[in-house]
Image (cartoon, rainbow, N blue to C red; front, side):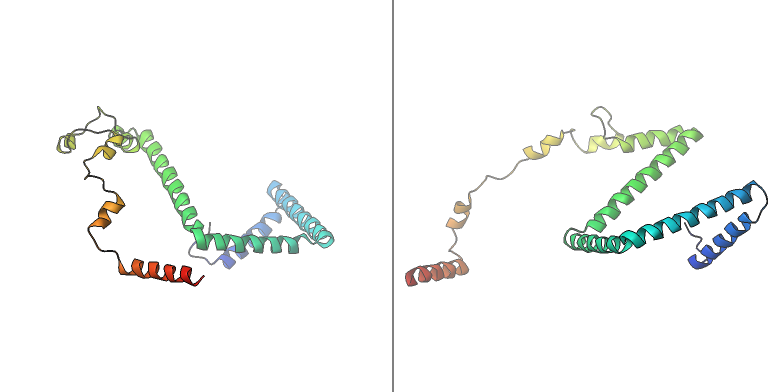
Length: 182
């Protein structure tokens, strides 16, 4: 993360100065800092020698650019970024709620636990609350399809009482004229 009071470039300089001061010590921490520095320099040298032989960075930049372009096209069509952000937000909220539940459990707060357990799981048939008597009889999920509906009418029955639409008549006339020309 970053500290909001300091700009990132200043944080980078402070980190470099802290690492350099760590390597100046003549103790175990100084030895560790110098060893880490030597490993990083060796890694950078190996990466540059491999890149000079195989030219991997240019190819990786080209492939990365193509992937980014395809991703932007997908995002324009399907709003992938918005869905990804929504999934990440859902996961973060779930983790935060779980951490909060664990902290409440560690405190021994039993009242909050009962509310959470009711909130997180679907209600059972015999788990009625006080305001359930206002809602009427409890129904299964399939009962929504059994509501009263008006009589079903076919499409042709609906059009019998009305004159045909003008645009349809004009379309039919155009089609007939085309067939006559052939």
